[in-house]
Length: 194
Image 1 (cartoon, one colour):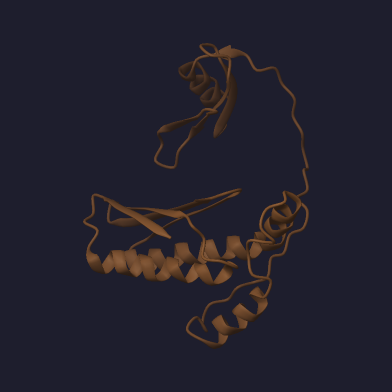
Image 2: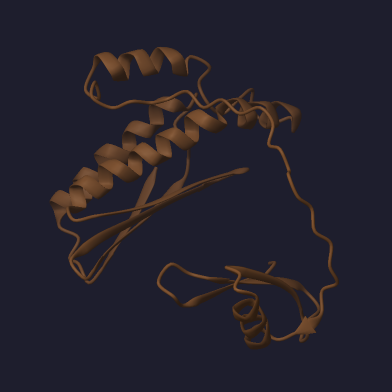
């Protein structure tokens, strides 16, 4: 894996960089073959709180987690645990998808349960990994609506008036379907198709 580690309001020391690479590198044990992927790590400090965000885009799979803690090393540990839970939760579903799409035999190791025993008996003996196998996602509500053509600023106003965290709209300039959303920092984001 190729690491792209950057800091915001924080100097990424060699010790921090090494710690991130060591911890995230342990995720490789969950894969059949070492994934060829870029690991995007963003570390930042806001009001004496350390934030870390890790994104690992892979073909047909995106692993992403974010964590905050007073100590950056603890935040790194927590965010890697979140990534491990994501892998464990979606292993069966992702492997099935890979087989159906004619890709590699499967992406994740089938013997993750054995890995869990190694983890529990080894270095991570204090951590609990509850098994969360989910085969089907249940949709409990569906909504249909017309996409009114508007610009991003009008969509943000509509979203704020409705009190929602996101708003889907048709871009009046190019006709594409876009989404505006409220970020955790209170600012806004825009999602556009490529």
